[in-house]
Length: 445
Image 1 (cartoon, one colour):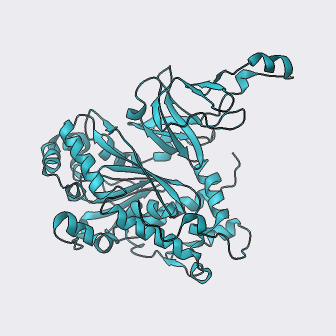
Image 2 (cartoon, rainbow, N blue to C red):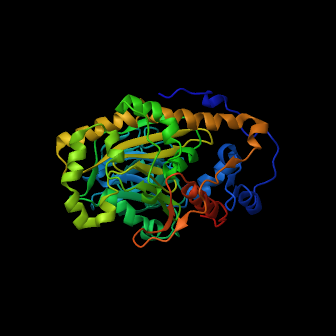
Image 3 (tube, one colour):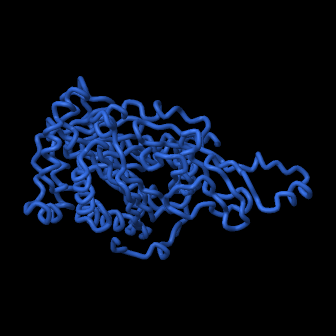
C-alpha cells in the first residue's frame, strides 16, 4: 500500500471562508487562455459535491467489461460516483446496472465483489430482488398487503441505470436525458479501436481486480493519464533504471508525438510501436506485436498500427484511464475530495496465447500495481500534491498549466483536436474544459 503523507481522516476541509459557488466562481477557477488553475478544484467540499451531482450522476461512466458478466447471473459490484451499483447479466442476456441499495431501509443487497447470483437478498429484512432489480419477494408479504394503504410491490424495484456498450466496454448513466453513448464517445471511438478492435476476436479482462486506496483528489490521476508525459523522465527515471538498467530518454522526435482530445476524452501518443509494451519486460510480447502488425495495418491502417504499443496514455472522461501497450486499465473512484479507490484490470486480446496473457499480467503487476515500481512513484506525487492544499496560503497560489497550449495543428488522419509535441498541457486543459462545461450546467436530474 502506498505511504500516506497524512492520514485521510485527519485532513481538515473548508478551513477558510469563501463566497458561494456560482457560474462566475467556477469559470474563474481555470484560465484556459493563459493556462492556470485555482487549487480550489482539488480540496473544496462544495466543489466535490457538485462534481458528484453534475458530472458523475450525469455522464456515461465505465462500469465493466462484458467478459466480466458473460453468463446469466454473473455480477460485480462497483461505483458510479459514490453510488454503489450492481452490474449483472440478466435472463434476457442484457447487462443491467442498478443501485446496490434495498428500497426498504437502504441496506446493501450485495456485499460480494463478484460472482454468479440470480437473486440479491438484503441481510436486514430479507427483501429479494432479481437480476433486473425487480422486487420479487419479501418475508410475510401478507402483512404489507393487509396493513399498508397502497402496497405495490411492482413499484418497489431498485432504480436502474441506462446501459450501453462499445466493443466490450459497458457504460451506464442514471441521466435519462443524457446523449447516447455514441455521441458521448464521438471521435474517441477511432482511438479506442486501437485498443479494442485490433484483433477480430475482441478483448477481455483477465480474471482478478486489484483494488487500492490513495489519499488524493480523483482529478490528479485522471489528468495525469490524459497526457502528462512531462513527469515521466523525472518521476520514473529510477523505476526505468530498475526495469531496464538505464534511465528514461527524454529526447523525442516531437514531429511524431501528439496529443488528441474530444469531449474531454484524451489520448497522448507517439508512433514508436513498442514504447509502452517494452515496459512489460517480455520479448515475447514485442514479438507478438510485430508478428501481428500486417493484420493490424489491414484492419486499422498504417498510422493506428504504430500506436498499438507506443509510449502513450489515455483518459476516458471523467475517471477511466489506460495505457495502450501496457494494457493496464483502471478507474479512479472518488471517495471525497482527498481520497480515491483505484480499481485495476489487465486488458488483452481474447485470441492471444494464454502464456502471453500471463506475461501481460506480470508486466502490469511489476509496473502499475500498488507495489509496482511506476505506480508507487505516481501515487506519492498525487498524495503529496493533495496534502499540500491543507495550507491556507498555499491554497491561494494558482498552478501553472501553460505548457504548449498554442500547439494545435491540422492533421489529415488523426481525429479530434490534435496538438503536436509530447510535453504539453493541451489535453489537461481539454479535460478541465469539459469539467467546466458540466459543472456550469444547472439542469436538475
